[in-house]
Image (cartoon, rainbow, N blue to C red; front, top):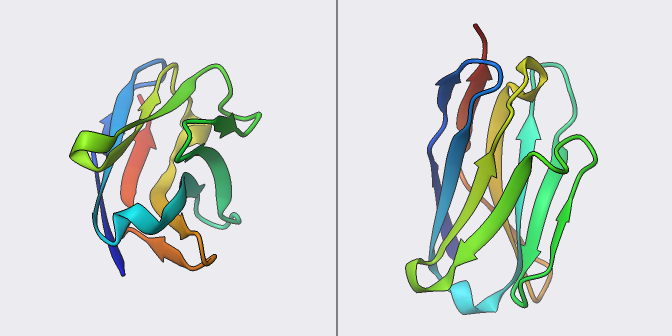
Length: 116
């Protein structure tokens, strides 16, 4: 079992920045990859970034060059640095842990609103 807690969401103006955090507890050593998803009202959940235990990262085209995923193993935390935010980035952002046995765990989500 893994428990994930996200934080760092909020209201920001277009062009601004936010950093989301996802802190894990429990069987964290069985995690294969950490991922950030987002879901806007009326839209499908979108995978936007992931980072493996080896540190490899991937990004959706919609956030590439603006968002950066990173991890601090000492703090059991994965971050999502979001720069140059746009109104279309408004969504609930969710942290996901995929285990080596392909089981998924989710955080509760944190709201990000980009608006002037």
